[in-house]
Structures are given as C-alpha cells and as structure tokens.
Image (cartoon, rainbow, N blue to C red; front, side, top):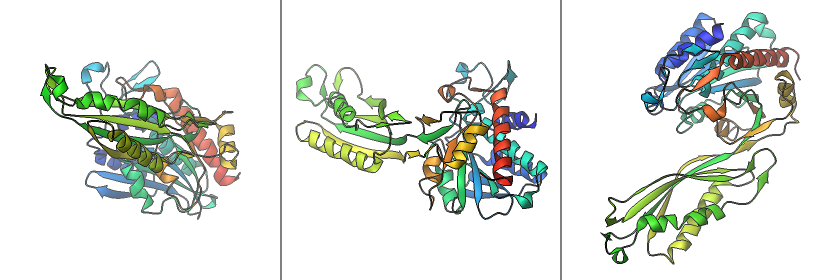
Length: 377
C-alpha cells in the first residue's frame, strides 16, 4: 500500500509549526513526484517554507486538491505512548503528529494523482488536476496566501481540501476571529486593594459584554457562533494588585456575520465600557479567517456526495486553507472538505488515523477525478 508508506514517511519528517520548517517534506514530495514523472514545481516564500504544486494535464480549467504540510507541535513527549515522529502502525491505526491533520489526507491526494496518471490518457482530461501542498496553515495560512499570488485558483472550477472529517463531506466552515484584549489598572499592596485598580477583575467584567455581542443568528449547516476565552494572564503574586492583564479570545462566527465589522463593533463596545470603568483597555486582532459556504446542490458537490457515499453534507467549526483559496479567488469556487481522521482527536497526544479511512479517501478521490475528468458532470 504505497499510500500508507507515503504517510509513514511524511510523519517521520518533523514539520511542527512553529517553527514551520517544511523543507524536508517539500523535498520528499518533489522527489516522489519526479520519480513518478509527475510535473512539479515549488514556490519558496520563506527560507524554510514553500508550496509544492503537482499537475496532470494541460486543460485550461482545473480541479485543485489541497493539503497543508505543517503540523501543530507535538507538545510534551511524556504524554505520548508512541513516537510522534515514528509513524508507527498498530491495530489498524497509524500514530504520529500530523497523521490525521493532515498528512493522511495529503498521502491520499498524492496517491490518487498517481493512480489517475497511470490509468488514463492525460492528454484527454477535461480538467487539469492540481495538488497544492501548502505550508504555514496552522499559524497564519501563509502558504495559501502565497499561492494566490501565482494565480493558482484563477481557472479552478472545484476545490477539494483533504482535512480530517471522518469521511464526511464538509461544504461550509465557520469564520475565525482571534483577538487579544488587554487591561491596564494600578498596582497596590494586596492588603489595601482599594488603593489600586485590579486589571484582572476589570478584564473579567468584560466577559458578559463579549458574549452578548455575538449576533444570535443561525446558519443552516454551521449552527451558532461561539466564543472561547482560551488564555488569560496577569499579575505577579497574591499580595499585589495586578496593574495589567490580557485575554485571548477565539470567536467562531457564521455567515452572514462580517468578521471585520464584528471586530470593529467589539472594539467600539469596549471603548464605551471604558468610559464608566477605572481601567483602560486595548484590543488587537491577531487573526481573521473568513467563513466559507456553498450549496450542496452544486453539480460537483452532488457528484462528490454520490461517489463518497454521503447523503447529508456537514459544516465545520474549524478553518482551513479554503478560507483563503475560496474567498480570494476571482470567481466563485465550489468546494468540499473531505479527508481521513477524527477532527475531535487532532492536535492531541497520540494523534492517529485509521488506515482504512486513508485508503477510502484515496479510492474516493481517484473515482471522482476519473469521473469528472473523463466523463464530466
């Protein structure tokens, strides 16, 4: 099973982000493509970060398969029962950092590309088939942004993002807004807190405002918007009134909410709150990933649902490269998010992916590409 061999090899190549060094992974895929006579090119946009692009055919219109090559850090190695960079196989699973997110999906894309090349006349393809391997998805979507400068989506008619979905077909994803909010108070001795301004307490007083600011709109596929206050820091010791503090917020917002307008509204509300508060506040936007969604009635999506034996598409709470590739394209692009691995288990110690799911994704992608490129929709 070449697909599983590729997956194990990719896991053994550490591409944790940060620092986001994908050089070894890029070089491996390039060598693999050249060994299989698949046209390949690289786009280096940082010293150790690049996109890699494999293509089949010369048709003007294209179908793009996308997968990111970086992973989140392995974290505390003592929490792992398996080597996070060992690609170990046991009881039907492959273990390792990135096994599900998303080197399993990348491996399936590569193997499907090779299968198509070996079984059809490339010159007769109705669409050019492109695999785009990106870097820096886990931190800032830098690879997808760099790829847009190449015009890679200009003639694309359908996008497949092979992120882990437990073999379900995603047709929408929530927008992501990461925001840091800082408070500035006044230090004092802990025995006389009335002489100071407690930056932590005043920041906590903002929490109801933040939650109430989220519009109560529901999306038919994605459901409700959410807020997670994921980090708080401040203070020096129990006997000192903290003079500054900060929180980091993760808003997941559904269409039709405009993320930039929402961020501006939050900032305005905090400034209004500040007028009747002894502390001062400051906001910083750390990341914006736009929401994307499309109709399951699209002809490409209907065919993909049929080939993958899915009836009801789903929405995803997490963001993907589609947040850039779809929203920054010059035309409307239908897309699906479909790949091996359980989204609930990614980013954890002992990350794993079912071998059967990886092979199923390879099979589905191969069948879909053969059908779409030789027969059409």
